[in-house]
Image 1 (cartoon, rainbow, N blue to C red):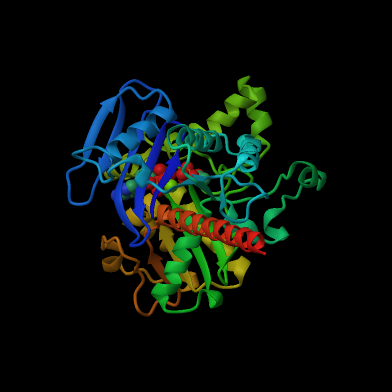
Image 2: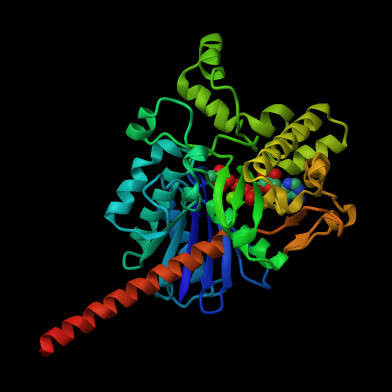
Length: 417
Ligand SMILES: Nc1ncnc2c1ncn2[C@@H]1O[C@H](COP(=O)(O)OP(=O)(O)O)[C@@H](O)[C@H]1O
Ligand SMILES: CC(=O)OP(=O)(O)O
Ligand SMILES: [Mg+2]
């Protein structure tokens, strides 16, 4: 079965096509600058040079059409025709309390995702556009949705409740949901495999440090606490997001700067974090480069960013009364040895002894970056949210086939009676 995995953002769309019998990625790529002039489609097939196509892609329906054209292209494609795609799996950031597992898309599911637009304004509307675009181009193909929030539904009330009047929870479901769950789930299982110990016996802290970033306390295989909250704004300092701040800053800034609520929201989501403090970029690579050239603001941004991660790790050691391993993953976590060093050098009290040599190794495999005598292991485990999405989609479609087959055979045996 071939499954197309889609992670739709507001102006971008990433895709991977899987053969599920082998779990091989047949092709992958991304469309950037959707709705802007000169959109770019980048398409990769193993062992072949990357293909870049610049054209005008005004909306997600056109973007999906372009992806399908590329996947079935005579020269660059990997499929004979579109009917070779048997299912599509989407990443959906916010599933609220309605979804603690992945589901196949139907009208009711779409309605629920729409209800959650306010809670993930940067993400959920884009995912819905992705789902609608697939419906328009591949109307017969089943679609599944895999939620960032689902894995964190095991959190206990002491983690997920905010200390505000409880009516706000009962009436409006204001609570911590947590995000990047697919990634925290995937890397915690990989870490247990790497350590050769059952996940059900481990206390892990997983740090998904990408453009968006979150830490999670994974107690015996289940999410116990996580740094993102009702929305993906809370917690760590991120590329453009502020992370934790005193909520009183919001009304104060509105008054002092004569801003609207929307403007403050946009400031906290899009104009804060690394970008605001460094004054250079939201991209960690550029911040590190500037720091190496002696830029003081970049240095401050880098140190603040690492300090927040270190504080969360410390608090999760306390939350779980211990930790067996700390795991770094995602764009920054997998690639920036400088950031990992900055975070870990303040964790010696917990028994973390980083190995400079191991930390400098670049690899796409899980690896240990602490020395052999370190009491707590620190691992780098590359994440693969797309593979988990493909697996969930595959299992849901198989389940559906089985249900239909059983119903058919029941019907036939009833007719035969
Ligand atoms: N070699 C590197 N060193 C430091 N940071 C890196 C490196 N490679 C990628 N990154 C960072 O990873 C971030 C993207 O992470 P990623 O997990 O792909 O984010 P997202 O999925 O949210 O787009 C970029 O913003 C960049 O700062
Ligand atoms: C939830 C979230 O922040 O996702 P991303 O890191 O992809 O922005
Ligand atoms: Mg990501």
